[in-house]
Structures are given as C-alpha cells and as structure tokens.
Image (cartoon, rainbow, N blue to C red; front, side, top):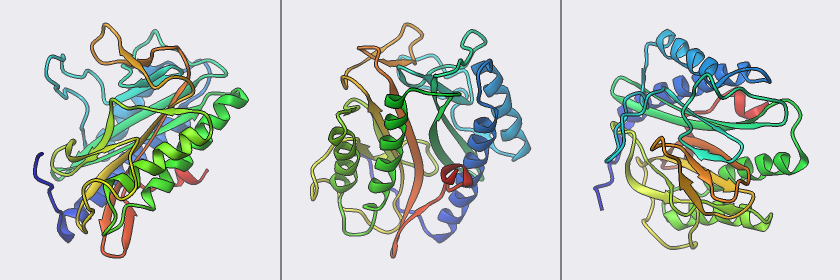
Length: 261
C-alpha cells in the first residue's frame, strides 16, 4: 500500500482554500441545472468559474492507465450513469432526470474534490428517496472520520444506509486520500466492517464519496473508456466531500451553502 500522507496545519489551510473553491464551482453549476440545459453548458460554467477563482482543474487531462486523458473539468452523470460521464452537447437535461456533478480543483499545489447529485425539475419519489439516502449516508460516514476510528467505520455507514433502504453500493470504486495528488492512499470503500481497516490519525485528508444504485451494484464501462453505468439501467447517485481529520474530529473542507439548501 502507498504511504499515507499526513498533512500539517499549513497544508490543511491550503486545502481549505482549494476545498472552498471546488465547492464554489459546484454551487455555480448547480444554480444552472434545469430542463433544456446541456452538459456542455455546465462544462462552460465550470471552466469560467475555475478561471475566475484562479484555480486549475484537477480533472482536465487526468490520465489513467489505458485511458485517453479526461477531456473536461467536470463529470456529468445522468440517471443510470454512476461516475465519469463526459459532458457534451448531445446530453440535454429533461424534467425528471437526476444528474451527479463531480468536480475538483487545485490551488497552490493542493486539491479539493466534491460531488453532488441534483434533481432536474420534478423527479419521481424513488429518485427523491435515492438522493435523500445517499446524501445522508455521506454525513453519517463523515461523523466516523475521527482519530482512533478505522476506515471500516466510515465504509460501514455508507453501506448500511443504502442497504437499509433496499439500495446497493458500488463495490468496484471507492473514495480516496487527497492532497498534493488528487488520488492518494488510503482507499475508502463504500462497504465495510466496523472496527476493521486502517486506523485514522489527525492530519489525514480524505475524499469520502458515496455511490448508491437503486438496483444491482454491478456496473459497466462504456466504449468512451470513461463512463460507468449501472448494468441494469437503474438510477445511481453520488455525493462527495473532502474531509480533514483533526484532533477534535472531522472538518469538511468543501463545505458550502449548497449542501444546506
């Protein structure tokens, strides 16, 4: 396993700035979401906001093994798209959709990463429940991100909330550490056993994300090499915060009024 990178006070302060910038970008995008808006329109808003904040996109040009560089500053995941949907002019939102927006930025060498799934117009009751459960599971998990606890305590909260409501969590993707690199150790799965896994220490910074499907947990990769969808076509939701573990408990570095509306 890669070495866990413990952050000092100066580094965490830098990550507060990048986290707040990422939250601002996400909020600007959320304010524009509605029927008739294309995901390309949302990408333009993101690029303008990132430039205004004097930040750099963490996603644009991001490279994974055997992948082409990611071509956008946000991931736009509509309905059965779980993660990594690529914005374009063809995908136009309509009433009743849900859309997950994932965005991350870098300021002064440190990343902030967050995601939120938005309703588009009037959504079905099942979709409303999915968003409510997924969002609340993230906060339940964040409450466990304190010194002395373990990764399994966080992961179990993500899994339990979803499965208690008849949903499933992703098993093939996870949250992650974050800092100078967008993805650092440790991994934070969406399922786990309390009291198991790496012990949490002050100075860890984690991108905790919850990915919940209405149907099966199984997913598939589309031919574009990035987009991941549910295998059964069921709805999926994503929420994410960047969280610092301090001596007195967790601090959400990507906090924003978006999350309280």
